[in-house]
Amino acid sequence: MAGCPVCEAPVLAGDTYCEACGHALGAPTCASCGAAAVDAEGYCERCGLRQPTDRDHAETVIDGGAAAVTDKGLRRSRNEDAVALLTSGEAIVTVVCDGVGSSPRADEASAVAVETASAALARGLGQEEAFELAGRAVTKLATSVDDAPACTYVAAVVERGRITIGWAGDTRAYWLPGPAGRPGVMLTVDDAIETGEITGWLGADAVDVPLHVRTLTPEAPGLLLVCSDGLWRYLDGYAFPSSGTPIDMAREMLRHALDSGGQDNVTIALIPLGVTHG
View 1 (tube, rainbow, N blue to C red):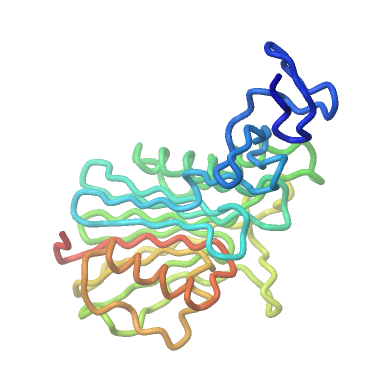
View 2 (cartoon, rainbow, N blue to C red):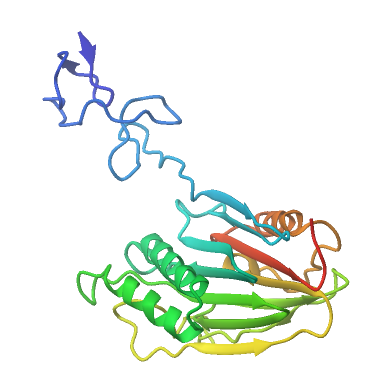
């Protein structure tokens, strides 16, 4: 006779649930303790470990060398950041959203905002339209204004040497002029008060949040960096990588964030302009 993987009470072949503790038999196996005890939320009912997901760490590299990395960091149980990096004709589109930690299901908010906005921008819609569609998608996740998933937002479209950025919140974009290693120039302005609390986000409880839009045409080669606060909180005095491909540089920036404490999720997107990075 087999035993329940959670309470070890005897169970019969063909049983669906353990009569002693109510555990659903036939659940996925825990990556740590090996018990078939992972619940629908992804936690092991025996040892409590949250199971790894494909959002814990992910990397993207597209033609031309542009790259993105996202990682849950060292202190968070899950990654509430989300990133898209894709090409559309001659344009490169990236969107980075950071789930607001004080909101419910913040990971869902960032994921749906990134998916919606990147698809809209890839179709050729403008920054304002993409932002509005993303906002509607996040708002639909809410059951009420008291149960409103939320995220910050930044999107960039790079085409024929011109950069257009739209943002709300404290997710940032920087211009890293060549040669690499020189100080970065912040291209966005945080929607936040002095204490660090954000004043702009996407969600059902967001009221009259404006989208900031900036367009620039760099006169010299360099890299566009789009990132969440899991990186930029550690950039004071930081010397950006001086060599390597964008994915190499993104990995090095991630290592810096983790070595500096890794207190939050970390997302980094790097797009080269005016020079080929293989």
